[in-house]
Image (tube, rainbow, N blue to C red):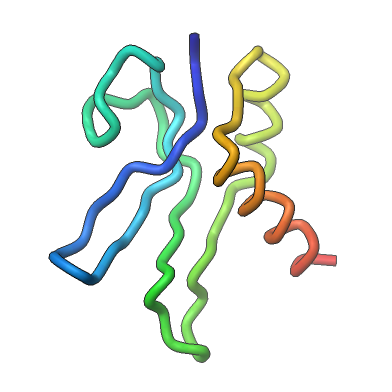
Length: 83
């Protein structure tokens, strides 16, 4: 099954997450199909901490990809901020 989830990067105690489309059998930080955005929870107020390519997320969701609970929350948050 294809899933849209977070892949952790960054250094110790400074997390940075990529939103990736991946096969659910692959490791969290392993191989992925496509990167569709990023989330930086440590970003300053002046920086953009959440960037999502909404058209690509919609495309993959239509193809049957499942969103993880956290990614679903972030997509909703991004849509709310864009409106």
